[in-house]
Length: 326
Image 1 (cartoon, one colour):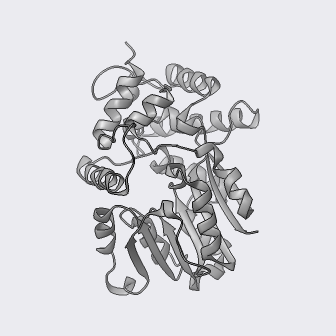
Image 2 (cartoon, helix red, strand yellow):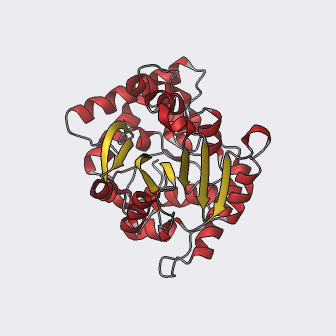
């Protein structure tokens, strides 16, 4: 028996994230900071291997071979080789969280120095614990409200934004702030969800995802921890706001807002319009990267998404964009 879609979404939120503030209450910085500090604590305590569909090693290998020409050529190696001038440059990272991504940017020699900003003081404290040994002087972390868009003027060679803009409501303000803080030859690097705002999946997405689940995914891989069979579903905007007021708040507008101030140099379509729905929530953790049968299913899913994207049935929900100032 299929589980209730909204009950599933609530269960996933309660397990992997804290209860969001009520939608009617103002999202004051202190409340938002507390929300993400608690989210971080739950992530550390959960023991969950992968948070999202693209964390799975088999998916990553397929993406890297398709977009970067080699399944072992990850994002950091790609950026270092494609944009070598950043290796001595100073970068700003928005909504840095616990600083893991920023640490990799420095250790992989993508950027010379990285300053990360996040509203949640607890997450920044975790990030600061990473600044040891040779990283001292190269990694800096600050508590700050990204929504204010106050990043200074022409102080950075790059702005890096990973999975953050789809949580930003003040897109115009943040885009202007990113433009101002970059030096004339600076680059903007965005890896983000640019799909339907408030995750209002299209009927075509839901139909394709549930068809694949029904026809290709064994019951054992789609059984939920609380019982029932996983199915891809679409919550209403009001339900999304009640669970997380910032989730995909204006995601479908991100590319248009960036285009006002930035000229894309490279756009890598990462997909996710089918992968994210089929491998949603806990389901991605059911797939063992050491199991050939599981990897075969992921490969078939990847191919099906690409086919539907090429035919125009599905769009592309996740993109890597490297742009320069207009």
